[in-house]
Amino acid sequence: MTSENSAELPSEDSAGPPRRSLHFPNENLLASPSPFVDANGRNPFADSEPHEAIDVDTGESNAYVSNYAGAAATPVEFEIRLNHRGGTLLLVAFLTVIMSGLSLLIYPAMWVVGVLGLWVFFCSLSDLNRMQLGRMNDEGRRQTRVALILTSGCLIGLVGSIVFSIVTL
Image (cartoon, one colour):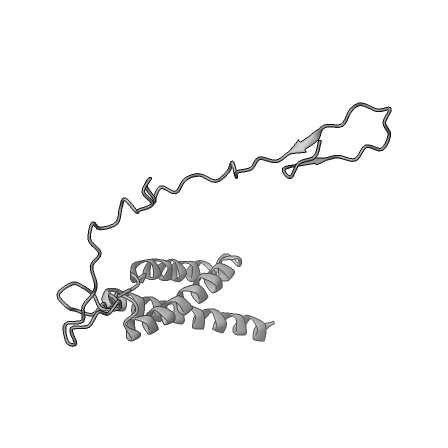
C-alpha cells in the first residue's frame, strides 16, 4: 500500500504486530488564508484608486516625494535633556558633612564619608559637564555646585585626618 503521499515503515520480522503506514496530507494544514487578500485576490484595505507621488518641481512621478503639499519627508528632530539631580546631590552632600563630623567620634563613619563623598563628587562633576554641553537641564546647576564644594571639603578633611593619624602613630 504505497502511494506518493504515504510511506511504509520497514518491519524487522513478520511475526510481530502489524505496522501502520504514515499518510501525509496533500495541503498544508498549518497555513491559514491571508487577511490581506479577499476572495478576488485584492487587498481590502488598499485605496480604491492608486495614487502616485508627484514631484512639484519637475512634475514627474517619484516614490520618494511626499504627497503632503509637495514637501519632502524630513526626520523629526527631538531634544532630549536629562533631569538634574541637584537636590539629591545636595542632600547627600549634607549627609556627608554630618557624617564627617561623626567620623571624629565613630571610626566606621569615616568609610561612609569616603564612599558617599566620592559618589557625590564624581556625580556632580559629570552633571556639571552635561549641563555645560546642554544635555542636562541646568536648573539645578547652583545646587550641584554647592554639593561639589561641600563634598570636596569633606574629602580634603578626610584625607587630612587619615594622614594626621598615620603621622602621629
